[in-house]
Amino acid sequence: MKKIGLYVTLTVGALISLFPFYWAFIGATNESGKLFSKQLSFTPGTKLIENVINLNESIGISRVMFNSLFVSLTYTCVSLLVCTMAAYAFAKFEFKGRDTIFAIFLLSMMIPYHATVIPLFKMMAAFGWLNTYKALIFPNLAYPFAIFLMRQNMLAFPNALIEAARIDGAGEWRIFFRIVLPSMKPALAATAIFLFMYQWNSFLWPLIAVSSTDMYTFPVALSSLFGLSRIDYGQVMAGVTLATVPIIIFFLALQRHFISGMLGSAVK
Amino acid sequence: MRDLVLRLNLSFYLNANKKGRGRLRTKTVETNSVTTKVEGRTEMKKHVWKKKIVPYIFIAPSVILFSIFMLYPIGYSFVMSFQTSVGGEMTFNGLENYKRLFNDAIFLKALKNTFIILIIQVPLMLFLALILAVLLHSSLLKWKAAFRVSFFLPAVTSLVAYSIIFSIMLMNDGLINQLLEWLGIGAIPWLSHPFWAKASLILAMTWRWVGYNMVIYLAALQNISEDLYEAASIDGASKVRQFFSITIPQLKPVILFTAILSTIGTLQLFDEPYTLTKGGPSDETLTIGMYLYQTGFRYFDFGYASTIAYVIVVLIAILSFIQFKVSGDER
Image (cartoon, rainbow over all chains, first blue to last red; front, side, top):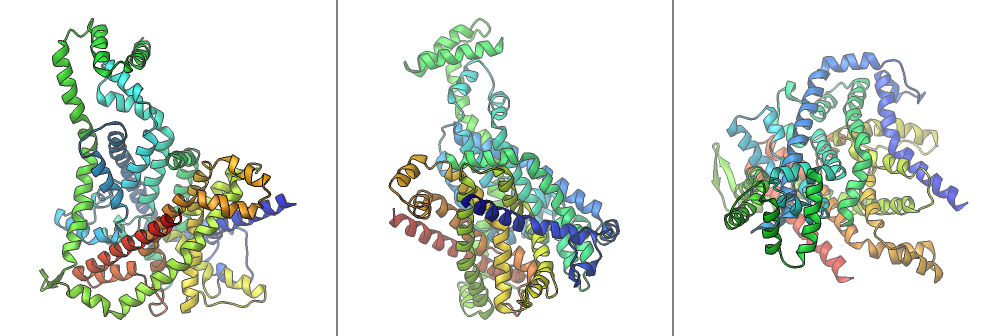
């Protein structure tokens, strides 16, 4: 009896968590007014293609999709490499200033992003980087939380293996890429999800750094669409759905690692 | 073959380790010297030097990028918080910005709004997350992974996307109000009433972040020894009692961690009010983050906007300190 209560609670909770996604999909497949009509319909309609075509006319889906994917994937790859290298040094080497530098990285997580936005904007203007991919990719490549997450996971890697490889004459890069990284797959996956999510969903910075519509990423494009005086809700929901599907796929593909990578960092 | 050599060296290392590192190294150099006929001493020196420089090479990219795009802006905006723009040139004006801030009715309203949201939303969300984590942790549960993914999924969506969905659901003739009318409760002016607009924000943020915090708690729950619960059960403590006397005290550091993270997040709140309520009605959901954006990028008053940013920094520092103190004293 108690158990049924538990399942009911969890199922209701899960439905609440998932329903808005479904509602966005319903919106994407129906005409604009349908979301507000008295006869609520919870089944997908037939207007999906029409909505997508309209959306494409308003924001240019392929361009926005390309911008978002290109920026997010490039950022994730480069940042993962940069942060993992730093994490490796923090976890497996002893050197002067290590703890101080690590503490500065950690403390910076407490500084709100807003405190950097205005100088960054001025800097980008001075570099001539406004309205370029560089402005979107560079600023957060050294992402303290990613460094922290990777370091925690690397602490458990046996020093003896590294030492043995070194004695065996393996170079430091070889040790890093061939011996340490292959055993870090779950942690790398978890960190990659974090970085990808961060960049894919980032809004304030792209809103500031990019002003021409052909450089818009999904959040900025959606927000501009939603700010119009006459809103076509079918289009907006189609946009929301399109912006959400890739990140859900990315997450579901790596989620097994994600949970264990998170566990790894919290347990230690 | 290489693998074998590696393993040999490994066992060698483990044995030799007790006797000291130096000895180990000379010995391995001997065994390897068939291929590399290098003088032991220069090899040692080179090795030590290399070892010293290696970690710096590994952290260099991070440190350089971090200094340019994080440290420098943080310092620069601190300087700017004491400056004002006179004819396009930034000039120092002492504490004027800070004085102006405390007489700025809109800023004070934004501050108040942010704190109301913070005080209600963060505890509500963390409590829900904790309960869900405890329910999901129970070992006999089926479909655990499916539940976990369902609860976490909101946390992967973009803030703008989910705010749009909620905004559409909460509109006057949107889904939620239609359901409320169908239930006979009647429509609620979600987005146009000062109280309900804040409630909408809190509702939406809670939906988005509960699963995220739940996963952190789930991870921490794996660490609590089952023996504690067993002993409590034998002593006749109820499940509720166990939750308050074992789970919560054991998770205290993690709860502190999530509380600080959420506080930082809420003080920076921007995407949701920007999309969901546009700060309205009449600035009732204007947050400090939004006010900073308006000041900086609509009125281009960079000096004053930096001052607002530094007020957020100071608030985060104070609140984190208080949270540390509060949880520290009880331990």
